[in-house]
Figure (cartoon, rainbow, N blue to C red):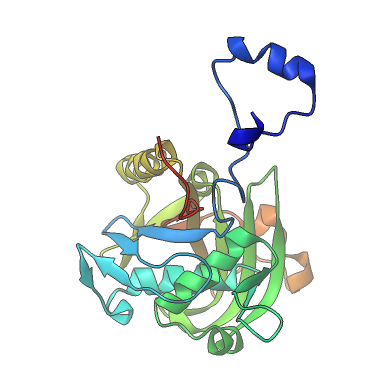
Length: 258
């Protein structure tokens, strides 16, 4: 056992090893690199591939194997901005103390900012031009997080926007509309099913999936007068579904696969 680099702490474990049929291991940081990476962005119009591993903002977004100009794909651009804005993690570039990109905050959120950079989005300019007004933090009951912004880029003419990211089914169930072919159209069961089928396909392949949506608040006359009164019950409804962001934790380069 020692020759195979297997550390045995209890002799009784060796005595019963002969009857073992399955060995389970926590893969994060052991079998994998512990660097979440966005591999795909899915919308009702397209499935985009994202190259590059880890937290370095190096890679590109392609469609059907061809590099694209993100600003020609309005929905994709909105998704990239949304996930970057609706996150709190920061990626720190290599410096004299560390020769690698490192994360301050949640690793999953960190990779969302990275994919936005791969799409040509300057994060410093984005946060300046889309001032955050309020955050409704993630919790395990709602399974989502919301941030509200004064969004200077505007969506269909609206500027005060709530961006929501979270579990796909929970997001879809509170979405009344979808973005399709550059237009905001009513949610239909076929759209719901198509998105869930994509989510399930990614999940079966061991990938993590987040749904992204928004709600335009400019013309909402029923909302409270003060931002502090904006609660999840009030804001997280009547959303417009944008798409799915797909992530993986790449395996270590030297890992031998069976």
